[in-house]
Image (cartoon, rainbow, N blue to C red; front, top):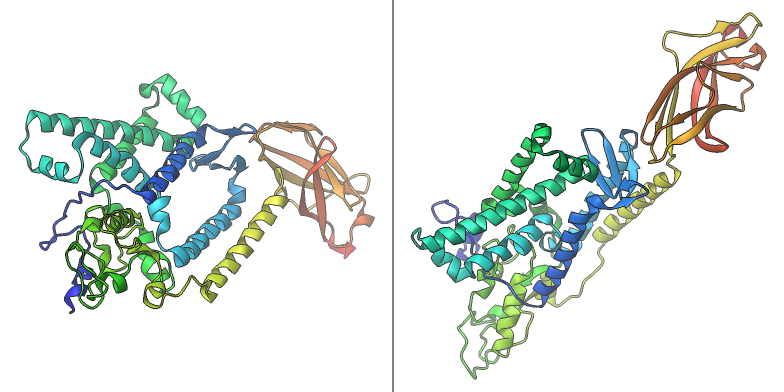
Length: 471
C-alpha cells in the first residue's frame, strides 16, 4: 500500500499500539473562528432560553415523550399528530442529505451541539485555566503538585457544574420549564425519581465533554459515517489544495526571498499548524477524512501562516475536489436537483397538513356489540361513543354536535353542551335517531360536525346501522 494512504488504516486519535492518543488542539484564532463564535453564542442563547419562551401559553419547544406532549415553535402536537412529526423528521433527513452533498460536514463544525459545547465552552474554559496546547501537554506530564491539583480540580469542578446546568436545560425540554422550576423550588428530595436520572445525565455530559470528546464525532455519531456515502467530487468541504501545496518538488521549509513557484516548490511550508489546531487530530493535507468536522480551524491557521510569509491565502479553504483539480466552479448537479425536488414536495405537504389541522381531534364510534334499536315511535336508533381531544392551550366551551346531510336527531346521554379544558379530553355517549325512510342501506355513512358555540371546529364520519330490509 502507498505510504501516503496508510493514515486511512486507523483513526487519527489512535497510536501505533491501538491506544487512544489524547488530542491537544492549539487554541484557534482567525476570521472563521470569530464567525463560529457568533453563531455558537447565538445558538447557545437559543438553547438555554427556548424552554422558557411561551407563545399563547405554549412552551416554544417541548418534547415530553412520557406524557406524549410536544410543542414545536409554540404549536402543540399530540400522539394523533404523529404523522406530522414523521414527515418533519423525513424533511430533516432529506435536508441534511442535501446540505451534506452540497457542503459536506459543515453542520458538524458550525451547528452541532456537541461541537459548540466542546469547542466554545469546555475547551475555552480549559484554555483559560491550563493554558494553550504546549502548557496543557507539560501540565499533564508533570507530577501532581499543588498547582496541578488546583488547576485540574478547578477545571473538573467547573465542568461538572456546567454539565449539571446542561442536564437541567435538557430536562426543561422534556418535562417543561414550569415543571422544572417547580421541582427546583420543592427541592431534590421531593422528586427523587427525577433528580436521580438528572444526576445520571449530568455524569453522561461530564464524561462526554471532559473525556470522550472528539470520539463522539469519530466513533459514536452516525452522521460522520454518512459522509462517505453522500460526498462526491463536487461537494464543497474544508480541503487542502494539494496542487498548489505540493507542486513538482513537494513541501519544503520556508526560506526568505525564495521564489517557490519558479522552483516548483509547493506553497505548504510544512509548519504543521493545521495539524496542531485540529480538534480531531488529523492532517487535512492527507485529503478528506472521516474524522474531519469542517470546523475551519485549519483554514484560519494556514491563512495566518501564508500571510506571514507573503504567500496567497486559501491553501486550505472551502472547495470541492473538482475545484482543486480542474478549477471548476460549484454546480447544481442533477443529484442536488433531485434532493431539492423531494425536499420541496415534502415541505409543501407538511405545510398543507398543518394548515388543515383542526383544533379538536374528534372520534365517534358505534358502541361495540350494538347494531340498532327500533323505538316505540317507529324510528331507528344507534348508540355512539365520542372522544374529543382539545389540542389548544385554551378551554373550549359550548361544545355540541350536529348532523350534516342526514335527517336525524342527536340525543346526548348527559349534557347537550359541554366544555373541554385546555389539552383535555372529553368522552361520552349519545344516540342518533332517525326515520327508517331516511335510510338508504343497512350501513349508512353519516357525517357529524363538532361546534364550539357557532364555530365549526371539526368533522368526523361514522356508520349508522339499519335493518337489511331497507336495502
